[in-house]
Length: 229
Picture 1 (cartoon, rainbow, N blue to C red):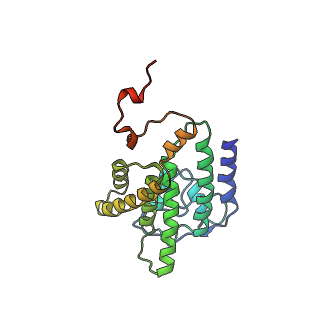
Picture 2 (tube, helix red, strand yellow):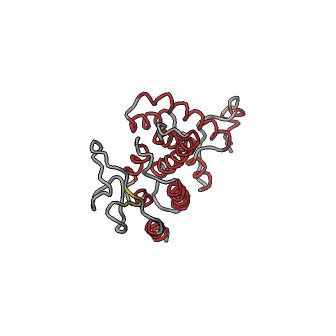
Picture 3 (cartoon, rainbow, N blue to C red):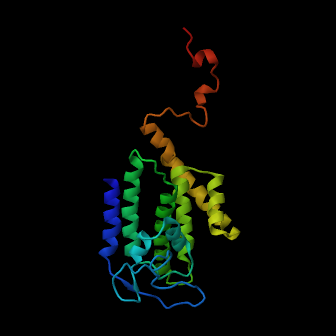
């Protein structure tokens, strides 16, 4: 049932949106708009509209998660997505991710977390660009910051996540920004609840050993902690 609902939403939402005229082609980018059938990347035509039109919501739904994340992170794509399409995708993808993660199916939240965070960050970047009216602000940098903050705020991964985000960007200049974002998101997350996997283990009734012993246990001995009949 979850699979059927996901398929209907993923196909129906792009079908209900209008196509957008392709931007002016950059010969140095090597990106075709609309893209040819059977290929991945940017600018999905979705089998309707004119030859020079594409569907930005279908570009998010009908790409692999790797290509969608790469498109959201990419620079010089300020006019590729609309705020309405990103908001629609964020609400639906977040809802589907929550429902799917709660089922008894082997499904993780790492890649969906990147998708959710990068979409949210891209929306913030679009708001900043429109508010300050400066087209030289890269929305992809906000998408990267959003993905890092969402992952660390929900999963509480430490150094490994910082390394992963730097490897994704292949740009060491973004390391101070990523570290700052991760520290802030972890502090905010710790103020409200524990990590996502810890909460899921507790809800499932799985015995979970805390990473640090409680303060009362520091002065306890074995006879006090265990009962010997």
